[in-house]
Amino acid sequence: APLGSAPQDLHYGLADYGLTLRYGPLDFVQVNQDVNVSMLRQALALLQPTSGQRVLDLFCGIGNFSLPIASMGADVLGVEFDSAMVQRARENAVLNSIENAEFAVADLQQDPKDMEFFSRGFDAVLLDPPRAGAREVLDAIAATGARRIVYVSCHAGSLARDAGVLVNQHGYTLQAAGAMDMFPQTSHVEAMALFERGLS
Image (cartoon, rainbow, N blue to C red; front, side):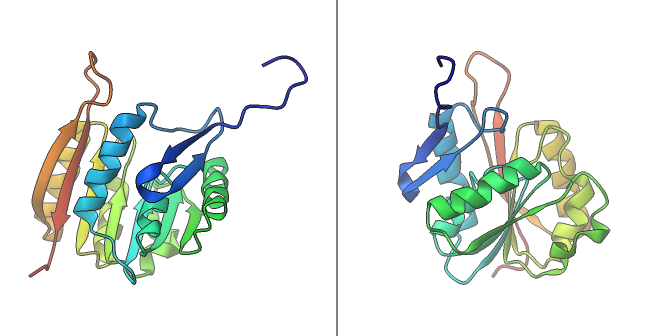
């Protein structure tokens, strides 16, 4: 942009949910938006959020999953380490007139014992961790009482390790799994898995 001009408003639309999400140049977003839309559709089909449900969205970024979930009527708490992205998520909720989503800052790769939100009850959890996975918070996720977990992963090895913990230590059952080719011609894929516990 020419010197002295206003910065460009960076944003993307999620037409399925009537949403527009703004983001900053340093924020993490899924740059392949066609695959992102497909990933959202698949994740929400597995999560099945409904009005009155309480959903925890971990590693929420600017609200890419949180806000579509909230638009379907569930009460959502999004958690993210980067305070600037949490602020952006809050601004996106206001921008889209969503009042049933709140956001908190926490380092989810640390011991969760001081993270008070884990003591709340949740019906479902969605998590989209970095390559290292989410081992540090799996016990806390299980303790929320969530009966359904949708795990979105950019590293199949971390997902496999964490799946073993959820199944073998916490009594979840792996109900579905799949992969999406986020960046064709590279080895990068997004994997997704649904875990359920105590559902009839």
